[in-house]
Length: 349
Image 1 (cartoon, rainbow, N blue to C red):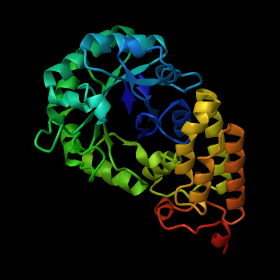
Image 2 (image 1 turned 45 degrees about the horizontal axis):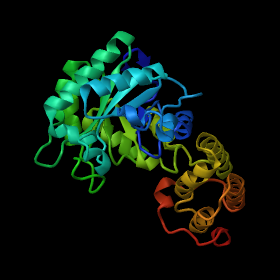
Image 3 (image 1 turned 90 degrees about the horizontal axis):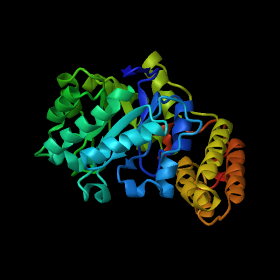
């Protein structure tokens, strides 16, 4: 599929996730088969532009194109100016956030809260498209099905966005009221796809190759977007892409390959954040990587007490080397959530 002038070679995208999909994570997901990756949301508030968080989120050094940046805000002029600022920093696609359900975002009537005010939402879309068009930069939109079960207006907003010039629409199959609770529904995404001609991306609860294929079939969407299922499992993108292309399943990663990927991810993470902040923010990633694995809980507890990148690296390296002595590959994703042995010794045949 295409977004403006950009051809994307895989219909499996990584979702923008605040605090997760930073540059090292996006680069890893792209390396492992994600066809598209969008930055963590960047506030349109000029007063936050020079904070450490915003500067990191706007750093695209070494990132493969097209570079997509998601912006969030409530004022059309400020959103247009934020789009231009991020284009100057290297953005090649601007994504408008109307999907985030976080209270600190919605409290300011940004994110998915904008779906309650369609005139304002459309004014923002029109302003951003008008700013980006002269630069040849396409605009995309990420939204939810609506504010709550009684007010599902994704179809109406999608039509208006398409008319305003948006070139791709991603829909999370939940309302803002749901947050991430319950199950995503795909009828609303199918309705959006039937209502517009631009590419539509289905998002929500896609955690396996089979689920990805089923969602594509149910919605007619052009691509799927994977978020939480990629935490600690970035190789899901190649697994899904391979299955969609061939109908065959890839074997889980070799333990030693996973070791290499995890350590490379951590090195890039520490480099971006610096040691003090990087060691602390890396803890969640390490926990996700070993979730459901033998002695994973013990490693997570140990890592949470470590204060240096070197100590984290040594602990993770030693863990995967021990694990490689007991098994060749990681377990299938379906098995990873099952109860794991409490020690590596217990997992030996």
